[in-house]
Image (cartoon, rainbow, N blue to C red):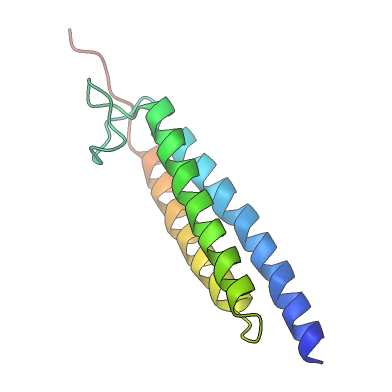
Length: 112
């Protein structure tokens, strides 16, 4: 029974990775052409830098997923997949909320 629980938890974790990646992509899409508050994602004109944004967002997501996979492998007796899935799903929800807000905010207009 424990093996079945771990298998289900791992499937949930994989699904949560898909949700996290999709939410990151949605957030990046919704930020294009808008002013960016985060200086790490901002270009020289103050707008979201698509290249820098995608690089940082994908790097952060990859680092999170890799860390989770390494921790799960290092402690196979503990089922860390459920906790990792919860972290990913909460993060995906937050990013989706930010993306939805971005879509309600108007795009920046060029200065006259």
